[in-house]
Amino acid sequence: MKLSIVIPAFNEEKNIGQSVRSLLRQDFKREDYEIIVVDNNSTDRTSAAAREAGADKVVLEKIKGINVARNRGYLESRGEIIAFLDADSEVLGDWMARIVEDLAPEEIAAVSGPYEYYFKGWQGFLAKIYQHFLIPKTPLVLELLFRRKAGVIIGGNFAVKRWAFVKTQGIPTHSFWGDDAFIAMLVSRKAGRVLFDTRLMVKSSSRRFTKEGFFHLPFLYAKAYFKAYFEDSTPPK
Image (cartoon, rainbow, N blue to C red; front, side, top):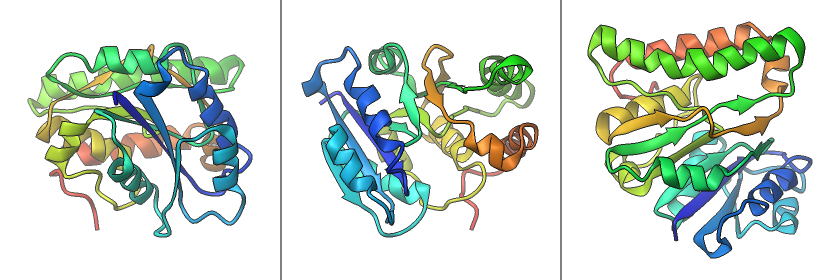
């Protein structure tokens, strides 16, 4: 099997169906991929909704934490490539085929891409600059300045080769701000290059911005990213 898609979900009854169905609409051989939903001990009908939408496997993970759920999905997977999608997101374009194409070179261990948010006007413009310019350029600048490997991963839109996860011993199960930044550094330093493809897009809700604030959320991510870059590849306690 080429591809396993893991969707961690906690109380996502209203959203999980559209995520699963967006995958099923992809122009990709059905026998070449599997959809795994990891129900992180939800109190609603998340598991039932995932099954009804067409997920191949729905796994209950009682230990809370998105990285715990991601790692459980990896352990349950069979694909040569393990991709991760948020439960409130929908894949766009030829998402699966692009992942396989991007990861074809031997030296590429992982790939990630941007979110497309529902913002309009100036918020949509700034979000696009952040996602399509600042994020992909940051690791290149850091490597040039400090001669230390860097990568960038968007936690709800990335894929990793199985052999790379073998080298990193899976995903660290700590949950903390910037855990996707840490995963990017870990893979880039222990496995291989992390590619950021601006064409590998998923449509995501803006609820994180609503919760944290439009400018505050990117600040938190940037702070976590630089912390992960300059520290050793050891997850915080």
